[in-house]
Length: 461
Length: 157
Figure 1 (tube, each protein chain N blue to C red):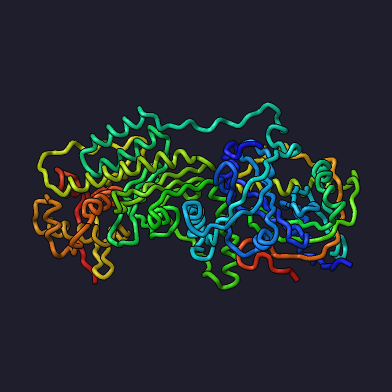
Figure 2: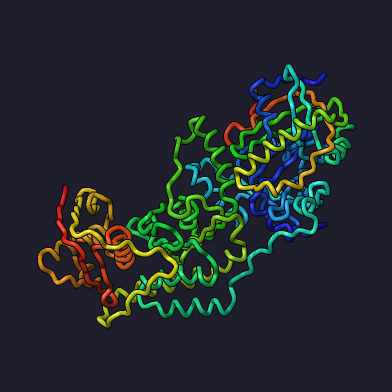
């Protein structure tokens, strides 16, 4: 029998598979299925999401046939199967559940398009279909391009470690992580989201490879791959997003027609508009979720299982580095810091052009608008408003994190206030949207307000 | 006497619009098997249809159909996943006629164009073998909704 391991590309869900079953009465059934999961050398698993004819058939007659297409060679394979059991918990179920629910959440289908069970089948035989030999038949001798070599060499890991050690601040550390992921490992589109003020949401704090920085974009727990990673605290890897989303959209339309879910619930999330591959890794220190690292690509099957395993290990290391940087910045240090290095390969910061700005703070919504455009809200908005008012009142413009922490008007939570990451978020939003106002880190745990325009401040109800 | 079902004109048009057609049969031990059909056309009146298969695929399937004529055809449009299942009985087979080739090519071309919309390039299906074909005649017995989601598997009127 052809070893199942050699069919790894067939198990990525890039091209839908077929499932043929037969009732005890002898009536055959054919169905298209979005994904076949590799379990071990002798087993595969199919998702059980609806009580359909295929499910009823295998309960009566365990024999089944799955037809898979290798997305690289387009060779077709038939797998002769025997239904063994349905798993409703455990690692196999969890890994299938997370992937399906991440897709479902993009279409507003969480709770409707869900995994009821992982149906495990024994593989009795694997046959290539001779008359459907794919590319080998179209262009004999042609081989698909070799998969990208694994970039996780000891040398690269050593270089990553060195760059992280050298980062003087949390701000620099976040940039260094994403820059290194691209330069050493080839992950061109990446982002880090950290816990914000609300316990069930993450905020985008650093991005790389996007035309718009996207700092401040929020993701709720359970929303998309990032939200599912945060909720489950487990990595998720998805290949062939577009086709899986089309499948989920087809389900959504049926569910909407039956009033099972409202229309147009697609959730806007940060990142590529149409990612084909996504890999999300939780940033965990012991049991605490600091945030999520997400890499994505516009190419199918960009991330392999090995990428997931290596990034998961790296994620633990990066989480400790981020937490250490957060703790270090809580301690003040008047030693001058080296200037923040430019972000190589990223779009140039928006130039400061305006001579006069109107900055409005809306007390009820706790948000700041600059010249009528939304800038920031919640704690970063309260901080910005406070320091701008103090500057207006004649303050020199030097602030320490400690002073902010002690200021009751800012209403910081008594524990885990995430002040350092809130300040980074504020600094980056200003760089992206309002470069005339700058928060320059002047030492560890301290910063200076610099203004490149005349400000008119107005507080609104 | 097998039951009869009637395919509506609208559905008939969809079924011959160039779709993914998955066809299941079974052997004496209830082992299911499946092959791809290249094209299908519903006859006037909607009670019968012809499906065309590449000859090697048909030969594989006919081994089952000669003993057990039950057949199931799943039609699916990849871009929308609109799908339906036709159950039926094989009532005959014959070599496809040369004048049927244009219809087979038209449906495959339309299917290929739909695949391209979801990122599967034309080069990917350049190696598909589609001619010569065997035509299989099918008496339709049942019709089912197959679009994924709630309601999949329900009988179609």
